[in-house]
Image (cartoon, rainbow, N blue to C red; front, top):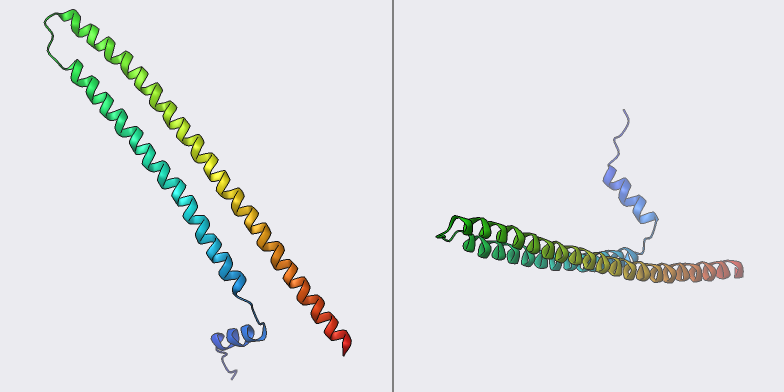
Length: 147
């Protein structure tokens, strides 16, 4: 009967046969964590500003509703109050939608800046790693030819 192999032992032997420099992986992990922190900062800042815009919009709407809900002596005043409310809501909505659009534009710009900086850093790291590997390969080739 065939002897069953232990997959853990096989994997350990395999990994022992190939020496791996884990510093590159550790660096990649750290770079990813920093990138995620920056992107989360952009997103959380945008969420805070968005909630401020929404809260202001709500407060403005409530203030206008308070005006419209007051008792009037003349029926025409109700019509005028409703017209004023609708006009004010259109202005408030336009201003707040513009604020949301500006926020979205700023978030997009900040995100692109973060990603471009990360890409530049990644390119520099890759170039340094390739140079190091090339230098090591040249060194190994020279030592092999000397023998």
